[in-house]
Image 1 (cartoon, helix red, strand yellow):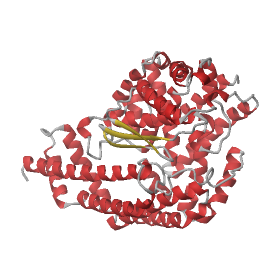
Image 2 (cartoon, helix red, strand yellow):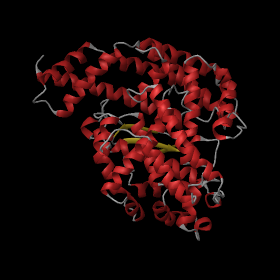
Image 3 (spheres, rainbow, N blue to C red):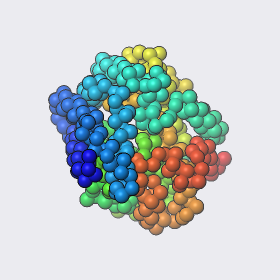
Image 4 (cartoon, rainbow, N blue to C red):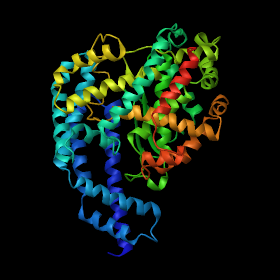
Length: 499
């Protein structure tokens, strides 16, 4: 095949795949935000059809021949195009081992289960989700056993989110972090709990929406490329660098919930908008991995948002929009309130120190579900038992317990540990950033964009052309070290609590 013909054929295939991905993303966003309740079945079937179409395109002979011809020429071919062609060949090899019908079945089942989860959470009744989740878990096991080389469904799903991650290694990292945090938690528990009254009160939704806009402006998020919606469980979808969509959830009695949701999802959005535009529309035009994606959201949420410098920067906005509550507030009062450490029921509202315990609970449950050691109907009782063991708290309802996350009904097995990896990656990236600038000075002056530009240069720009390990090594000068995360937490909260 002539090179010109190969390029035209391959680029046409990339455009078809980009269109299919866009349709899947938009339908998913609609389902999470504004679609009517009764549309779930039809949307699930449509997503299944789109999944089959994408699978067929990825494995088509025409795409394979075109990508092979482009890759063989090597020199003289545009670098981005060459990277896409090589990635297409790797993806074809991986997908040839997979059954398109099984992938489509999974897409349909998770679409139905997600709709059931929303209703079950609304009614705080796990039994409404249970039969749907049983089918999802069964399909997840069958998928893993059909496509996994090692035969361990846990390792298969971990690898789907963070390539190369194994359960045994992850368990070692989690044990290291748990052991490193236990003395800190004991010390904090001996100190008085900071007053968090400043972030509680009455904060009307329309004013919080105004605050959302100002917060995104402070972060440097380009609103011409980023839409904001509402969802029961906030999330972000990146369609391409010019079409990023985030969601949040407003609680009128707690302004911090929305603030940290926007910081978190805004971090995802900034990553998506910072990827090299030449990669847009291709599989390379997304985050390096789920863990690296979470590192950016957690960095903006915690390592920017939960600092004395950010309290100084954001307080003028809060005073302007909520003068009755924040008119006389001091930055240190706000900082201490948002950094209060105490066990909570909800993962998304957990403090930095106890957050990893929520992940450990989910990882333990997920291992048992996928390995057939725990039946779905036994999930609520085991969830509640582990919350007593890990966090020392009682779970009063399914809504505040096993139904709080959308991940399992959505088929996102192996994803929860990426939040832990994101925290640990973020701590290591923050240490590297501090060698090049004083982030607190930038935050305090409202110049968060300087931090964003550094992150874009070192992390965002490369999309999926570099692995997390390559990014960490090039950015931080060494391999991944979760001990840096433990040190960061001990330093920050040891000082805050006078330990």
